[in-house]
Length: 159
Image 1 (tube, one colour):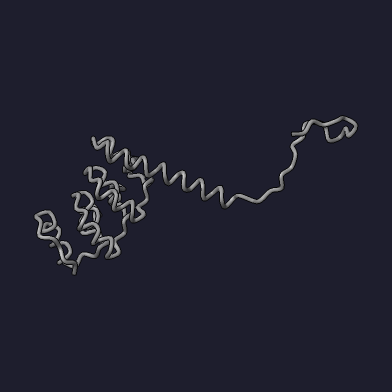
Image 2: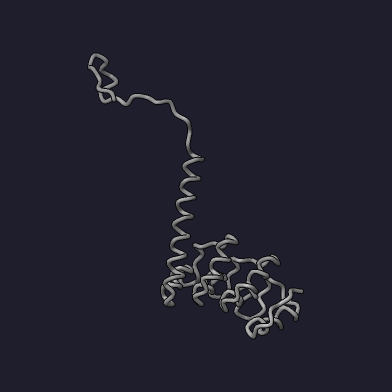
């Protein structure tokens, strides 16, 4: 069993875990796991312990929201940072087609939205660089020529 802090917010989550709730088992009809509740409550310490215990950080509830969505709606930059550092999928959409970034903007948390935008851009650049490295085939430097191949009597301009 996890050792929990003695804060009122964490004490509210204690019965879930003491009742035998698994870190990934949705304890309520809305399919929200303790990770959803921790992220939505801005409880980074509790969230960290849940992730260390093997919680699924991309598990979606009945609204299609993952813990990243919950942290964005709560405006918890600390929980967002922790989830991103743990490789949460930033592009997951809820049932309304919204990402965590969309929710941060719509809920009035521009610092969280900008953070998620920056991370998404960094991941895109990294992905493109990796793709370019994988697709890169060493090529011989060849001159490019303008002119007809069929008519070999015509002098071609090369650079």
